Structure formats: structure tokens, C-alpha cells
Image (cartoon, rainbow, N blue to C red; front, top):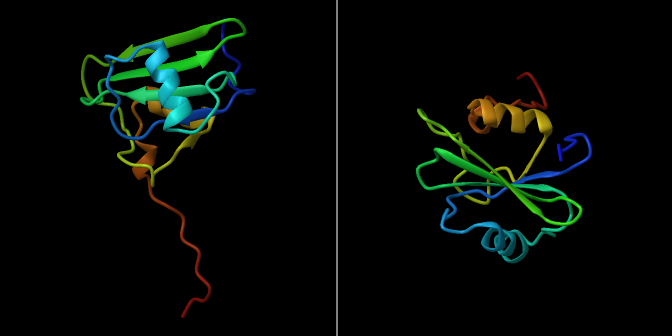
Length: 115
């Protein structure tokens, strides 16, 4: 099945995830560490220690799907800890898969006065 990104939430697990874990282990991380429902149909993203592999886990009606991307060169931009972003937009997912580091993009400023 092809996922409709307009109708799903996308969550990222900051920090490194051991890729000795497969579907069951990643689903347990979603439930126990991220405190989210692994059966919700949302996409859950994980990255390995070297940041050259990315896995996406999601529930598709009657079973889990596990998608993986491996970069031959470079590294994925990835948040190191829970203080950084946890839920992504579909636009951010696209940027992430393209290697664009939106985690460290310039942030907007709001001033109360000019002086």
C-alpha cells in the first residue's frame, strides 16, 4: 500500500536506534519510549548511530510495514535528544529524505519593541 501523507501523523525518534531491532522491537520503542500507539497508522522514523540508515515503521490495516533508506554518501540530519522536534509535517519528511537539515534552519524572531 502507498501511504497518503495527507492523512497520517509522522513521528521521529530522536537520537540513535539500534538497527538490530526490527518490527517488534521498533513497535515496542513506539509504545514504551515514545508513548504512542504503534497501531495508529502513523509513520514512526528511526535512524541508526552512523545516521546513514533510516527506517519507517507503520501499521497498514492488517500488519506492520517497515521501509528503509540507506545513504551511500553523507548522513541524515537527525535530532540528538527529546528537546528537539518529535512530530514532522509531510514537507519536513520530504526534506529529511532529501537530506535537508531543517532542524538547524534559522528560526523566526519576535520582538516586542524596536528599541
